[in-house]
Image 1 (spheres, helix red, strand yellow):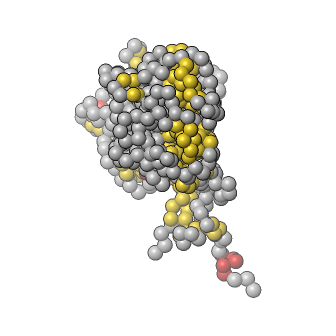
Image 2: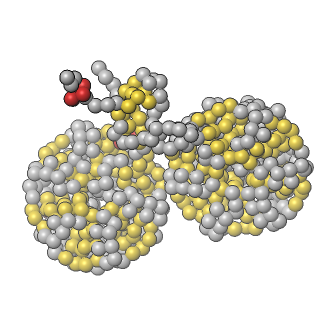
Length: 623
């Protein structure tokens, strides 16, 4: 006879450890050999070998600077040939058989001295052009990049870069963001990455180098300086640092974004590091503001076997004796920097997803823009212009199939009913929306199932609309209207589940906290947002959404605020790094992944920020 469990039950996998996205995310640190002399301020010598063969060159042992050089063999440290010139905070890279170190600090002066290592001894060679310390670096034994740093008390954070070809130093293109005490990844002078640093406050900024120019890419999750790293521009890790307190946080770079992984067991900063993302090493450093210089070594190793994480997976962790589920919790999301638009603008609209987006038209003080740009997850490319440039219009659809409807043009009568369709190559004027409408921020849905909600259909405060119109790819159809008219609100979702939040309403005009939810047939008022604003942006649907940015009226306050909707209530969560109003987003891509491009505060910006919610394993509470 079949039992009830076999008929109605389901299998729950039992695992000894939580599932992970990769071997690196499931990796861990283990103790290695202790150095003969503990020291710190090795923060720029990041790539001096591998986990089982690395050098610890110069540094600060507690008083003065040292010329000592120790070599690690995977289990123990041995003193080998000293530098000719003692220093701390130098720039260097290479291996245990061929390396260089350059510049640095020997009180009271920064140095220009460069020395090369042949596996036995150090030899002085050509000097750097600019004496500096506390910088970042990456490279190999005969190639390297010396990035920014502390040049003088009046130039503590700068953008200067020098490239080493094994013989000479050459000044090359400067970084975008001045900094010192940053971490580097890379094994040549033509391909690398500099992350974090002091500006003078701790930074999350990351820039990549292609041999001729620097490009800002995704920020690290935890702002810090005096971190150290190992790996390449396509995959690496950074470890430790100061936030300003010392930290053991470690982050993995996959060539696109940063993910927090296992912490160092011993939090510290200004140490040395090397190896790769899957086999890294961190050694020395300071654990207490320079007064405690441990010689401890930790080795990071990626897991060779692990269970692959799957969103929605329910399992039993036999080690912690707990039922768990793999999910994305919106309040745990963060904003990080993306690629900048080519044309700064505000009051633009968007379509697509975080990694395949459009930013359409908009406005700057010079007038309305017809420009359209396409995003690939890291950079924007200008594509075919719309036929009629306008601001505060509705955009919806995908990167290859979108619509651009309504909006405002500089010429009379201003608001328009124009509707343009995008096929991935060009824009074509198609059936107008039923009423000329501006003061929109975004539409929702797809090109064949789109929607435009609210907006301004006639002059004055009384011209705010309750309209809710659907688009089927050809024609527009009026649907059940909003309960309260409004303009410049955050709209998110699709034809069966949508949300409209905040915006301008009433006579006289005021910003509202009111929110309405669409269930496919009618709008219902639900819980209010915490902060009234307009020209804000949304992403999600009726049951899960976020609303972000915007400004208040009649005040001029501009917000970085993000609020999350869980189907019942709004919660304030992570802010944008910079407050702004009126940028483009992606309305129907969910509460876990979207972006904001452009906007105003009060001048227009080209900045893009990406919203991402990590996949995490959460304990199920059973009462």
